[in-house]
Image 1 (cartoon, rainbow, N blue to C red):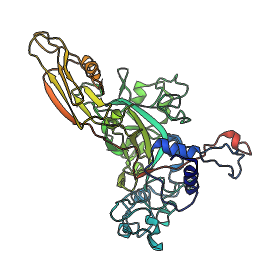
Image 2 (image 1 turned 90 degrees about the vertical axis):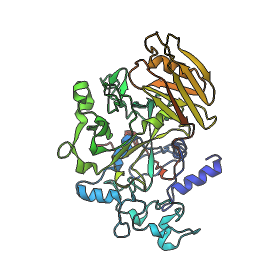
Image 3 (image 1 turned 90 degrees about the horizontal axis):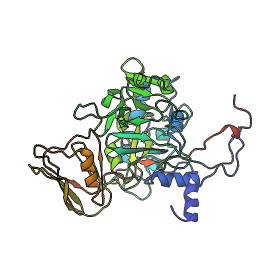
Image 4 (image 1 turned 120 degrees about the horizontal axis):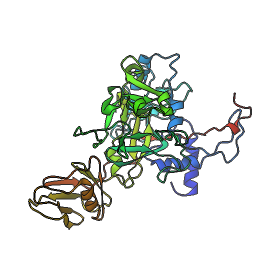
Amino acid sequence: LSGASTTAAIINDMRTPRQPPMVHVSQVGAMRLCNQATSTEVLGMSLSATSTLALPTKKYQRAYSLWDDDTLSESSITTTETGLSLNSTSKCNSSSASGISDNYADVGIPDSNTFYSLPGTATSNIRSVISGSDITASCVSRFKVQDTVGNVGEWTGSRVNCPTLSSCQGLIETDLLALPNSGFDFQVGDRSDSYDRFRLGNFGGFEYGPCVDTDSDDVCDGALSTWIIEDENFDANAMSIPLGLPARNDFAINFATSAVATFLSDVGQTSGITDDQLHDDNFLFNTDIIFSEANACGAISSGGSYLAGTGSGVFRMEFLPCTNTALGHVTIKDISVRVDSLSGTTRTLTLINPGSAAALATLTCNDSTIVIRLAHDGTSVTTTAALLAAQITLCAGNTAVVSGTAQPQAGASTSTFDITPTANNRRVDVGFRCVLPIENEFYNEPKP
């Protein structure tokens, strides 16, 4: 994406209809392309040449993706989102081009009847269709925005930070890891609210949102993975409607004065936001992978792709690493260790119980091996999780954090883990769309 002529050509292609979706680009790359495009002609609005496009924030994405449920039944929305038998009727492309997958051929240029398959081939397993295709003509929101569900996932400009396996928080544009001009979607008001921003798991010793408690000690200590929203896994039994974010149904008790409670709805079979309204949409948070990224930074994509199947939809949300630095990690009891440098292919962490009085000590620390002798008072191991995490972090190329209760670490153990990328920040099933954020001053007539 470097070079003025190259960028100009890419932006020109972005404006041309019926092109393959632009994929295999990182969130930052997508942001830069959007920021270099401008819009000056929108009916009823006064725009300048400096009216630059941007990646949509999570709030914008939720808004323009909404189905027209005034005219569509919940069952028809589910059918459209799932995308089976595209050869019979137009739907979202969520199930690997179901019904037309045989038309993806190993040829340089497909014939006019299957031109929609670009750039997919039989052997590539890419099953996206071109933007604006007749194949997905019915996959449009109430605002007539096409392909916000399925085909390829779409980057938003929103990010999260997951400092441990079990905790994440939404970032706002003033945070160091946030993208420029990414807004304050995850902040509640002026931060004087008792629930100042969207969070998962424990922060400051308080359980804010859905989490995994592997040892039932009322402390979040495990990774949030993937779940069907209506299954209410990880105590995610409520939802903040404006942004489609998961919450616990005891939120109103824990944050009785928060303005967020007004917009909270229980997830239920027949009440609140119902199973029928959720259409089997998935959350894919994979907080262990985001924790593994060099800065524990996660970028949010939406909608799902041709690979998502029933999990695609308006509520679909996936965390992907901000950079291609999510390397191996391991969890021993309440301690999680991530590798910060790529050297070698595996790393072994060994904890030794001396069995008699001994001080905490690091015996070996190199690119492949970490050996630590736990402190012992003559009766039992006394090394706390916090002390052990600090000792591991002293070994260059590793960061260790406590994901649960900082209790003494008893017994000896050895864990070997791969030092290889665990996720990619550029995927063939994730693309983007640029939007023009509209402010009041853009309107020729005052907004009503």
